[in-house]
Length: 142
Image 1: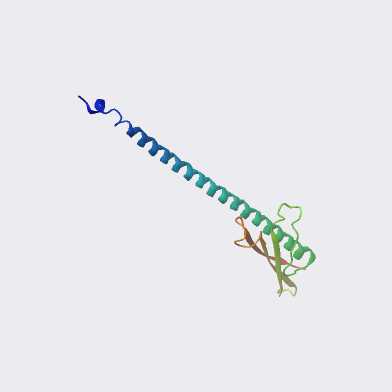
Image 2: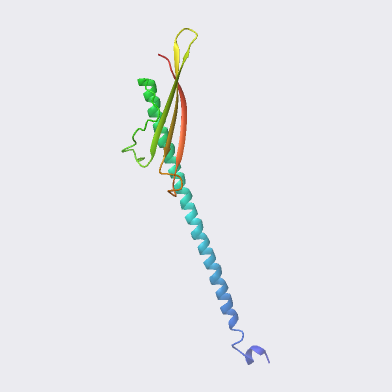
């Protein structure tokens, strides 16, 4: 005679252990997927903010180049406004330094070195803090 017929409740506990094991595995998989999703969302958000910081710094650089070439204006620590551009949250600072060099034929060449810095907030204050610094050197002949 078989033992499971004599004691039928004894083999029924194995199903409970298997079910608990399955519940634990499914819970771990769900928690891992949630954590990966959160990390991916944060990475995408930061990448977007970095791209926006680049565009803000690029706009400041182009603004400074335009002022230097067309108006011969080269000011240090100028803060142009980004109002209405969708980049309002970025603080933009454009530095311009000029040097005049004599040419062989007797004229002068003016070199403008521009540095544009864009950032939103202070480091550590925001989770999506972004900072970008771009520079360019342009030449102007009178």
